[in-house]
Amino acid sequence: MSHKVLIANRGEIALRALRACKELGLKTVAVHSDGDVDLKHLRFADETVCIGPASPLESYLNVPSILSAAEVTNTDAIYPGYGFLAEDYEFAEQCEVSGFKFIGPSSKVIKQMGDKITAKTIAEDSGIPTVPGYKDALPDSEEDLLKITNKIGFPIMIKATAGGGGRGMRVARNFKEFIDGINITKQEAMNAFGNDTLYLEKYIENPRHIEVQVFGDGKGEAIHLGTRDCSLQRRHQKIIEEAPAIDIDENALDLVLNACVKLCKKLKYEGAGTIEFLYKDKEFFFIEMNTRIQVEHPVTEMITMFDLVKAQLKVALNLDITLNQTNITFKGHAMECRINAEDPFTFVPSPGLITKMHPPGGFGVRFDSHIYSGYKVPPYYDSLLAKIITATNKRSSCIKRMKNALDEFFVEGIKTNHSLHLLLMEDEVFCNNQHDINYLENIFMKQFNND
Image 1: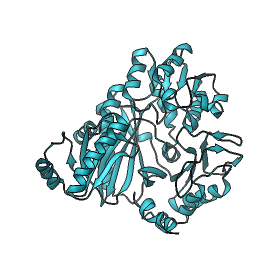
Image 2: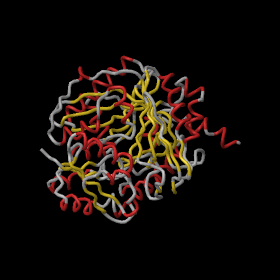
Image 3: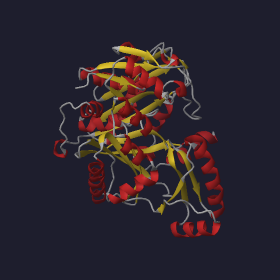
Image 4: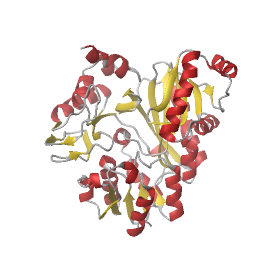
């Protein structure tokens, strides 16, 4: 049995992982950059190691430094969280070669599912519905490209196979935009990911964003933990998430859930994963699989009482855990608001000193955060400060509870998107579950831009 876990991340997910380790009686090593000496979880870890300067490239993305920290502290396993190196198959591979257990899927599976073209093929083989498109190498001649576009039909989404986080994507509504978009997206993809391979998909107009939480034991057993709706987003970045997704065709959902479990069993998937879909007119279309824990995992935990992070640790460290779909029950509705250090309407980041803050509380309210009064939000990392989660028996009362939680919560000293969430809790379209992935950016925000 492994007894010491190095947490190769920062912020709220690092604190979340540390708490799970403590519950399981595991020793912890918290690594940090020069710019993160005041992180809350450093106070509770058994050991701390500085792994470099504030720049992520020199610290949280510095593989030799992280592996050196693991070696000098006699670490058994490395927990990657989300972001940074969590879906870097080369990092997972180096952990494996160096004798450290990577807490997550194997490097082989991360590589397979991290390549959008390969992932789509694997999904299709498991019976998961996919978006019509073109996944082979794109031809050079415009004549051949025209044949492809005629077959798919405009609008077309141009995607980088190594893309992620909303980057490496461009919509073309005619052939001229298509040719220009290919050249621009190739350059963007090379700059951002070092890989300019592209593929094409039919652009689904105004769909919802639905995802399925899966979990596997790495030996061929797997389960699903239902759905989440992550349709409220801007620039492909999620703002509010909820579980379960409602107003979904039951027949289509049953087929997708079974296919997702089938895929995980076939891959001998280990740990937590999320399979993401576009959903429109009672049809699901596979987008990608995220081979890590998701920011929004708490809403799934709240309706299933299944601790995903503890389960990740148990599976990786060969602790006692049994995966049985019949043991998973779903109760009520849960919602999560992401509180970011940014202007609520321009989304410009707002780092700085938090002079005062007060977390929400009460029955059915969960607050996942690393911030505190006197904490200085650094400018080097993602702007996520906190996640406010509410859970009740149904969606409408969940919204009411979230509004109360938001009313109770405050942060002073920096700007946050807190007021945006309050407005959304009063928005008729959102409250009636009539929004799609373009609603926030294209309709809701326009009223403020016009003012």
